[in-house]
Each structure stands twice: as C-alpha cells, then as structure tokens.
Length: 319
Ligand SMILES: [Zn+2]
Image (cartoon, helix red, strand yellow):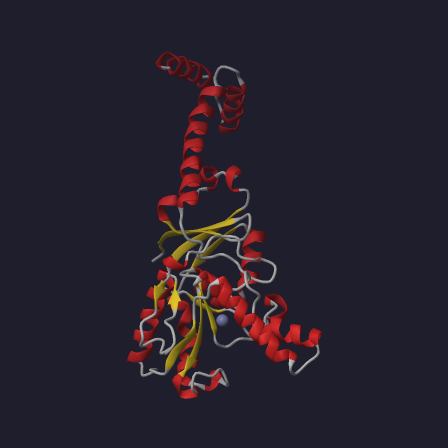
C-alpha cells in the first residue's frame, strides 16, 4: 500500500509540474482520477469510510427503541409494537381519576410534569389530564360506545361519520402510543366546553410547544387531519419538532408532507439553536455519510410512517 501511495505521489508531482492554470490543473486532476491505477485507491478509502459509517447509522436506527415521531391517522395505522409496560403512571395532581390511573410514555411524562409545574407557578392550577394511554381494547370500547350513543340519535351512516370525526378506531389512535393526552380544566368540571375561554388554556396553546407538545387537531385543518377540531387533544413530539410545527402554523400531516418534499429541513429555534431534520426513505440504501447526517448529535431518530424515518440532528448554537 505504501509503495502504491509513493507511486501515486510521483505521478501527481510529474503531472503537477506541467500545470499552468487552475483550470488546466483541474482538467489534469480529472484525467488523473480516470486512470485505472489511481481511481480504485481514492474511492476505496472514501467508500470504506462511507460504508462503515452508513452501517453504524443503520444499526443505531434499528436499535432505537421508541418512535416518538410516528404519524398515526386514518391513513396510517399503528404498525409498531406498543408495550403497556413501558408506560409510566401520571401523578395524581395531574390526573384525578378515581377508578384507574392514567399512563403515558416516559418522555411525554417528563414534559407534562414540567408543564404542570410551570403552569402552577403562573397560577394556572386548574389543568387536568382526562385521558392518556389507551390499549387496543379500551380504544375499541371507546369507539363502540360512542357509535352506540350516536346510533340512538342518527341513522347508521350519519352516526358512523359523527363517531369517526372525534374518535379513532382501534389501531388508529395516538392514545395507543402513550404520546397523546386530553387535557381539561377543573373549572369546567373536566368537560371540553369552551376550553379556549379559560386563561390556563390560552397559556397552554401559546406555550405547549416549549414542552414538545402540539395541539394535534387545530381549527381550520380538519380536511387535512380528517379529525374535527379538538381543543383538548395534545400530541407529544418533543423538541424541536413541536416548535417548528407551531411556528410554521402547520398540522402534523402538513409537516410530514413538507419533510417528504424537501427531504432536509434546517430550523433555528427561538434560543438560536440550529437543527436539521432529515427525511430517510429506503433506510438500507440511504447514504448518511454523503448527506452529512451527524449521528452523534441526533436528538431524535424515529420511524415516521410504515417505510420511512426521520432523524433530527442538533447542529450548533448559532450566536
Ligand atoms: Zn385525545
């Protein structure tokens, strides 16, 4: 190998000696790389580095345990295993259920705890979590109960449409991920009527992104989400994804579509931290090395839908 590099150096010096201009130099360089002897050595170094890096990232993605950014809606059923044992109980001051406790994903719980502490410090002590993680069977029961209630009021088609507007069928609900919560206020006796008029909710809508939470079914986006406006349903996405979506006035479906279109989104948050979001289609053939995905700085690696992934990378502090 050493001799080969020496040979390469001599060839390079001889050719460089005849170089007069930058343009000519570039031409010679491209001629040099076309020769059979040299090309394999240069690309082998690059290729082996790229291949081992790509393999490392591929394995890291495979090992990542939880898909925080998984898109779940009427078109995207849950295709991952959700283990109810991974969920943690919500503390009683956030949820005052008498029959059973509520559970959520641990990352989501961390955020909710901080949100409730900050809310209380500001005097908003009426927020309450009505509903959180649901397993398949409780989602199924909820859907069937709502459908039965609607069937007493409407014909079958209308009852079905009304139900689908508010309750997802089992297998299609974010609540099954442990990443969604329905929040109400003790001032409203835990109902969802006129939540927007409550001061604590006005604060919540403007600040929930700081805790990685997104109002998942906003007003005006019903045609995109296929779900009616739900001022109570919040989805945990973590930072900076929740902030990006909030600042861009998108719903989650619109974010996913934009990411698929643009493939790379760079975002500077309100603290001047810079992030890049990479859309990874065809995981096993994606060139992470070529695309400059810095896996050491990845703050979120997640399945996005049935075949694609998203990697969120922290770049630097821009100030
Ligand atoms: Zn909900």
